[in-house]
Image (cartoon, rainbow, N blue to C red; front, side, top):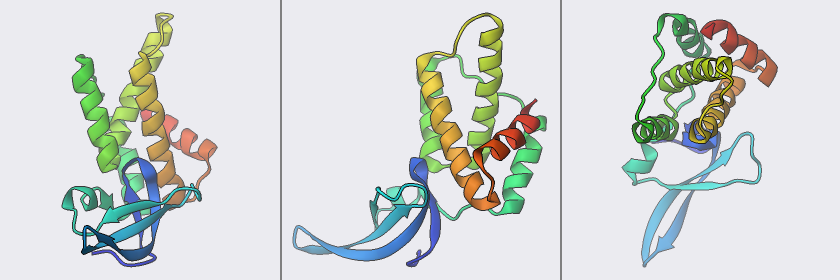
Length: 165
């Protein structure tokens, strides 16, 4: 169980602070909620029922600096993954984003960067769905990396580009 002021990562919302644990009356029953405030979006608030394992399972503590650097340093050794079937590829994107799985997100990011370069070489572009998920994956990665490593977007871009060459 998490506590007020804990910092967690929650899917596409990225790094969030638990601002409170509130009780709300739903159909005559008191239900406790984690109230999350995304660190980089003051206008958003997310309420997650404490007892809803399907949603709380998507919450996790941010990785440590050491864990992030270890995952990034391992990228050159990892083979790209490209799923030819678009619906299966979209499913993989959605699952990695929903769980904020940094290892999977980094590998998908690397694969999409390489795919994008390959398409550009042939004077083509990524499919719209791949481009949209590329932006979502990039945002999720940059969100947590920025928070943990205290780097700006340019520094993160340089770090990742050097790792995936």
